[in-house]
Length: 467
Ligand SMILES: [Zn+2]
Ligand SMILES: [Zn+2]
Image (cartoon, rainbow, N blue to C red; front, side, top):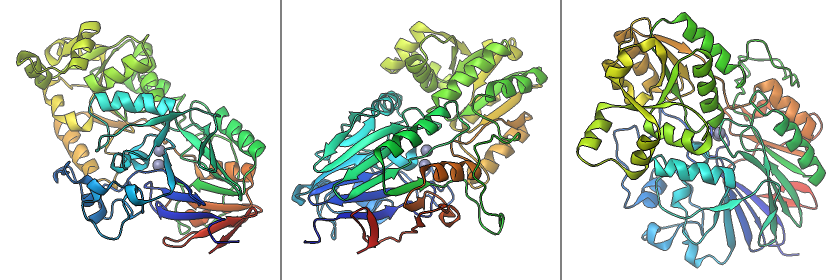
């Protein structure tokens, strides 16, 4: 037996960070890479909003900043432009494919850097959403084609078989992957939660994964806190604690906040959460307020919730674009179809509106009458204290005199739910990652493996060992 005839697993990112998970699974001349995002940490991010990305040398620059790993056979010769220590895709004889569990930036942020001849697979829901985001200028750097795959439809990369299984997460199209080689199989959870709109998807994923059987579970643990804070072992439970706001309860919570305000309602969301967009529309309807979206989000709503009624905000910047004939085609089409409102019109009766205000458009609030108004922060950036921009937003809202109210919920399972999902899956080998404290996730029967970078793990005859 040569060492080639084994399944080799290597970890390149995301072991002790939130996101930036990059894992390779290799069997003979076949290789699968999942996911391909950038780690999420606004306080240490090189691109702080001021530093500009050079679109002419993204791969080289990202490699030098350590934002993407030096993986052979993944980047094109042209993009590497002589960068040493990495074999270009053109010179690598392996058959490689990249598979993406969902389209959050910590999972897709660097997918545009991959050589054009290497297929990058997204579920068809993810791809549809990605294309819409790309249209409105919210795609990732780099320009390439993407391939689609479908839930429960297995496909092959050489001798490796991949099956996407849907999960619930706070973005459309999220999936887990079942990855099978002749040596055994791996289940990669992607990001998931049990308090979303579709908890049954998690139960079904557990069932489907067990039907297919697997040896190694690679699972996210975003919500795990340090042992100093919580010394108790995690209790496996799928109960929803009373203080946990579910995706389904968000609209009614927003309605009660809006009913207390006699002025305008503003909201800040992450627009690729289509369930949340639906929730916003529901909150608008039940509080008898017209929902006003920024054009980019309006485009997503018109694509994914086409029956909805809403208006589009005309900022002074957009009006300028119209005046100068610089309005982009997608905006033009949108403005023909939906009602548009500017600040003057909204100020005639602010309490009739529930209006989007993204962090980057915070200055638009200056044009609005915010007396007795409320700013509902619902998981839009900046997400929290760990982001230096968060204090900036708080200062701004305080200065302008509008109440800042948090009504949101995470896309990640709470610790007890993680333990429940893990216990139900009951793997022989567990590799927790996408977490600051992966060691807290302990399987009830199988072995916990906390991998290291630069080490090759071998799956042979359904056993996981270090090479
Ligand atoms: Zn993530
Ligand atoms: Zn995610």
